[in-house]
Image 1 (cartoon, helix red, strand yellow):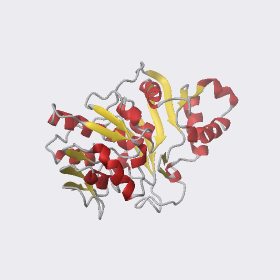
Image 2 (cartoon, helix red, strand yellow):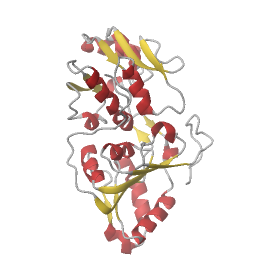
Image 3 (cartoon, helix red, strand yellow):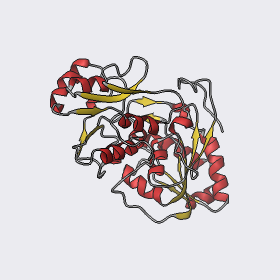
Image 4 (spheres, helix red, strand yellow):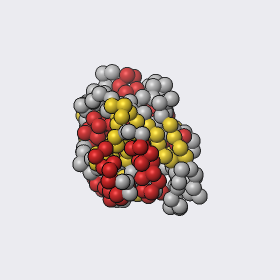
Length: 302
């Protein structure tokens, strides 16, 4: 199993991994991922082995893929949850069966493929891929294992001000304005909620700006954990939140995986394809000029 680059995308692949294990209970299932997303999969009982190999992601050299493939011989089947060069890598590995997504010219080396189209949720796309091998495609629950959950606190709200950044891409248009976040935070604090901010180190500046826009009298009700947690530690905090509010981010998917309700702010990416699903999740979408192609455009407001 060759997983995608993004942390959130890997989280959305967990239903497909579960379905694959159910379809093939005695098979050896190994997963290839990068180090940024390994926490999502560590402890997953549906896997035999987790292989971390950063240089395959974003590799520009076909020769590099060919050389690395010699270390992955012996697999009968490759399940590829990514486009670009990774289906080619599966071909170089010599896998007889290669299943994955097809879009335009991407995925031409696959033996079994399912077409990706706009509006199809990524979870459903990944389930369709394993469905080509006979796996069930109806259970869409995200999973996370080996994290220390905590009791729900009805007065605790989690937030991620940043987002829009993955190891190989940046889309700042996903971010809501700090002024708008500050207004939201003020309203929550006025209602007696305690706020906990989460995110990566890249989100720290925006978070500190939001906090600086809030009256100092509220600061005792604010917990800033941005840039100071692992994904599993963030999952523990999220599991105790009444709700988590963010843009389209990895933490949004992490919150869904630990069964915390989410309010997600979308634009330009499409919530039909990426937002957590279920009656406990809500989405706000503000389209931009680039919503179809996700190219740089204007900052969105909700």
